[in-house]
Structures are given as structure tokens and as C-alpha cells.
Amino acid sequence: MLLLTGVDKLRNDAREGFFNTVSGTDLIVGARSGSLPLLLYSVFNIGQPTNNIRWSSYQQIANHDQVAWSIPITLGDSHRGFRVVGTTDAYFEHYRFW
Image (cartoon, rainbow, N blue to C red):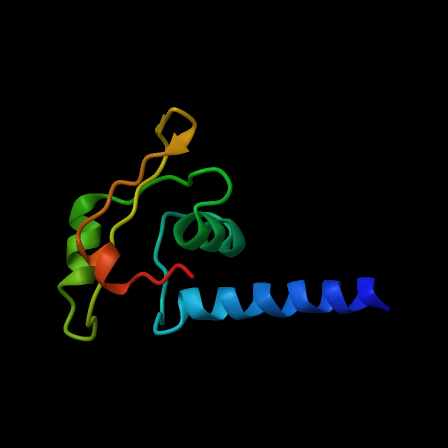
């Protein structure tokens, strides 16, 4: 019984962490790839990096009237085993990671 309770607690905590991380986000835009790899890469920094979009494409999306905020993210390099994230200050203003 304790094992089942522990598994259920982990499942609920993982679900809550996922929804807290992406809450307030309506759209994730990236180069052509599967939707799950793009989500895992851009939100959780898990998996292999996808191709990047051009900076001019990002600026066009970010400057659209219906876009309140945007966060550019690029991954790929690492330093001493940790991934290096290329982004702007908006990442720290809007991204929740608890």
C-alpha cells in the first residue's frame, strides 16, 4: 500500500510541476519537429535540440500585436556537464521552474 501511495504522490507532483511551469503560456514556436520534442526541449531542457528559427522570424513573431511577451531560447552547448542556455532577461521574468 505504501508503494502505491508513493507512486501516486510522484505522479501528482510531476503533473503539478508540469502545469505550473507552462501555465500562462499559450504557444510554443520552433522549427519543424515533433510537438513533444519541442515542448521537452524548450520548457524542460530535456532531449536533443531542434533546429533553430531565424532571428528575424523570432522578431516578427515577438513584435506581433497579439503577443504580450516572448522568450527566445537556444540550447546545444554545455560547460562541465551543464547545458548552456542562450536567452534574454525575459526568461527570468516569465519562466517558472518549481
